[in-house]
Image (cartoon, rainbow, N blue to C red; front, top):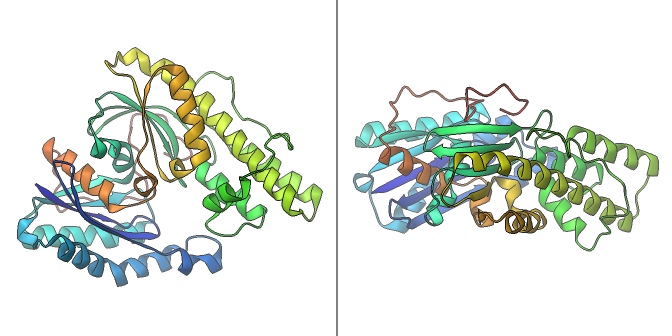
Amino acid sequence: MIVLGIETSCDETAAALVTDDRRVLAEAVLSQIDDHRPFGGVVPELAARSHIDHLDHLIERVMQEASIGFADLGGVAATAGPGLIGGVIVGLMTAKAIAAVHACRFAAVNHLEAHALSPRLLGEVAFPYLVLLISGGHCQLLVVEGVGRYRRLGTTIDDAVGEAFDKVAKMLGLGYPGGPALEAAAVGGDARRFSLPRPLIGRAGCDFSFAGLKTAVMHLVRAKGRLVPDEIRDLAASFQKAVGDVLCDRTRQALALYRDWGPATPTLVVAGGVAANQYLRTRIERLAAEAGVRLAIPPPRLCTDNATMVAWAGIERIKDNRLDTLAAPARARWPLDPAAAPGAKA
């Protein structure tokens, strides 16, 4: 079975063709970074217009690269949320049109589920597993009990971790996109030079908080006035280490709860754009080794927004008989665990 995946939830336009035996036949991602850089962040209207301009061409490109036609498709999957609603609508309506004209099975994919299921594209990862989902808009710990079945253990009560990276990078004058720029700036920095808070560390539960950490950086920057290069490097390193400490502490708490599910092979999955950060990957690798759990982290290209993971999530849903009708709505918000108490970034 070949599934066409479409991703337009933020500022990447993407299309991919994936098979149910885990082969990626073709994939393409068009970044809009240069379009949004002058504004220091994503402008929703510009993002949606860019998706309109480029999505058809990307689909045509992957179809030609794989040498297949629409009649060869076993299904089409598109991100239906959460995300910037204008962009989501572009990809979702395109997928619906393809499904309607070519009589394809259709999957309206939750973007967060696509991240959570992405390691299963690379090999067998048995349910239930624990996922740390870290991105620009989300920071959550969930137990993945199966396709479409999630139990949230913790979420951010204020800012998402990727949002904190971006805003601190802006305070330090590191440019856009902030997350990769801050990671690069932190290389060689002294992470012990600046004392920063670790919100919620040591407390019960698995929730996150990054607003206080971000505010502490802001006060340091204001007190210093103009930062010299070594101060920027050390402050970036100090911030990144504080984030790593928080993520590891909260994940350690979640691992203790997750073991109550009695998994045959305890597995920690880390997914989302921030999972591309090499420093944080190293910290979490160390945590997994200490906890004696298997770790599954997709390569960086599958951590950031892409259509390959959307196609795979579509395959998972189709195989689980979780098909959608063409009436499936676009959603700006779409929690994976609707029964969980509302969080700031649900």
